[in-house]
Length: 297
Image 1 (cartoon, helix red, strand yellow):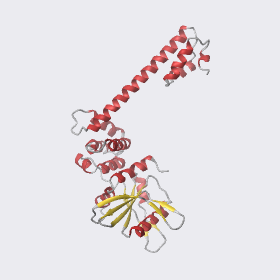
Image 2: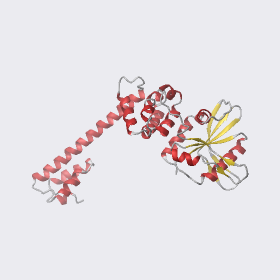
Image 3: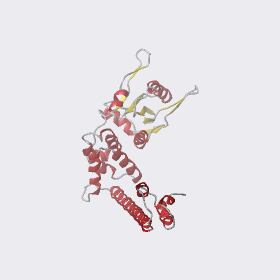
Image 4: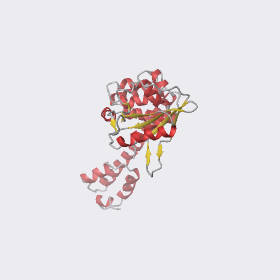
């Protein structure tokens, strides 16, 4: 079953199908035909035989008719099965759309990218498939705000590929500008993707930028996100305060009644995070004859 990270990467291409063409042209130097529209289409590849193959995503570049089909495959780990299915994806889509078809493999991890980049021998003379590979070596490092604004999905992909490296903090500086002007749901999704991809130093730097009232690119999304985080923190703090109060009251009642609280029972009470359970124990504490009776149902 595809992982959340796998699906998140595909969502970048669904939201911006032209990203596939831009990676081929700008990152890999592959000639791409002129087109008027990029479409993310169904990747289901059914055949006459009772077998179904499903690529991750197919992007079609259109100008009156399909001009190029890009089979987009996200690869997060080596999978030898792909050495048999990738040629199927290409030949089937080429026959279906009657246009040139290429395979673009997106592999943010360097080791996985090396595996994906190996030539694939099909056994037929001259028929060797070498995928076009978007890995850390070819995915650009987006650090300038203007770059992020022009291609927010590429900015997110950059963070996923390079956010753990030494340029993670520089990448973080471009995140908030890239989110300005896009809808809140997508902004939150992209922000969470970036945050999960950055190293600790970069993540701290981004959080500091969000909380800085003088930050030039402070967006309405960033302010709402930060306010939500603070409110969640306050609610969590209030919850923890109530729990602590119930624990203290429970121990005081038991001790006031002369009931000996052994270390194991004290620890069980102290680690309880269920406010309802603590209240239940507190009510029982006024009448039980022993601490052990407190925990009996």
